[in-house]
Length: 122
Ligand SMILES: [Zn+2]
Image (tube, rainbow, N blue to C red; front, side, top):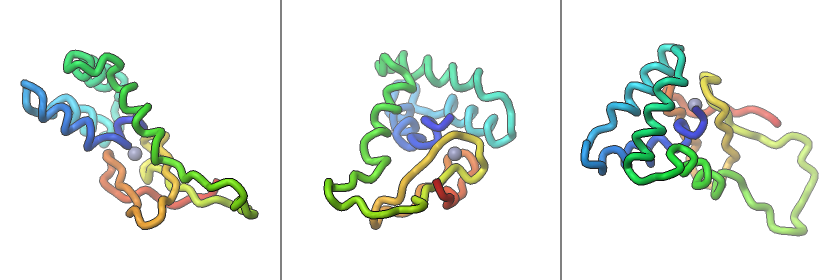
């Protein structure tokens, strides 16, 4: 679910650019998650649809993309004492998404609840 939450806009664009031209499978998954339902089925459907669109790794394609930019890179030698590092987590704890503050980038919103991610400490 964290992949979907963090990449919902990419996935939506992918689906909307597809021949089918709509994001119904994504919408169904989000609706299920919002309602607290079992998401394994809809996740699989979305995964297969993405594969059919040519993303051979399905949802995993987006995990790789998420890696870049999701975490601050601290230049060598600037490591200072950080007793607790702030981290932002999914507000509804519906997914395992985590996000580290990135300068002026605004805090992202959870795709499921629509709320901004909540601040926490590592
Ligand atoms: Zn989330």
